[in-house]
Length: 356
Image (cartoon, rainbow, N blue to C red; front, side):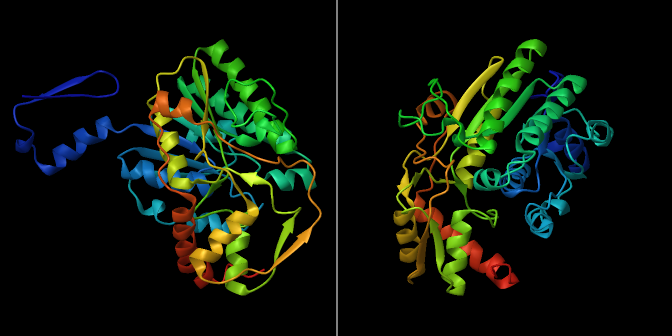
């Protein structure tokens, strides 16, 4: 005897699942597929997450407005494969257009994974206008949508930047000396507070994942590792702001995606915070050396003035996520850089997207 139960606790009994013909089996399998809403679904992390969820049998609704912070064509390439998948639906919209988005949703949603944001710590320092407003408004829209549709779990991607230049390292979720230094970091911390308030008021589960320096395939072109790869391939000098001794806890995107998926099964109360990071910071100088080792060539560097508003170090204490969610980062920085350079060569350099 085989018992199957769907997400609404309806039971189905089969004497022998092998007697089901293929079409009937497909129908029953669809009953058990959870549908997840991913905001910012065409971006670097969102598109990698969607691919992983589809591979695990989830249905994915991805919402993205293809913001022009960087070339929207890159985002279209990010989701090109997913668009061919029968369990993937793309909604071209800003999540803040909540009435429109609600009308596009064809099925019950198990959870919202909120990645939509105006991105970039450094860019927010240089061009601060609208960062806090948009990032908090987009989260509030996701929360309001959850209330309307009776969605009981929200997973929010926060940032290690909320710790600022905390004197306590590695950073722990329980510490109170948070000092965000940039408009982007401020928007993430304020969003966590909004999520906490919503969760208590409407009895939903809000999990905030503080991500640490994510890198890997489909990386945004404004980020340091992308720029290093560019310089390797086109021979231009790499501009370093400061002396190159600031340290970052670089975390491969597959590990981050796994952390997000682990959080979906965590039986949280109303509010919970987890660090999602590899747990081993390195300096920018050390990072460049690893790129040179993997590529077998040197990078020319030029040093400029440091940019105020950036942390001296980010360093995840990931013990809470390991203990409670079984989060296990597996990709070392050296291995991850090798994978990233392979992707860069195959998909970026060959498409002439590495030009300045």
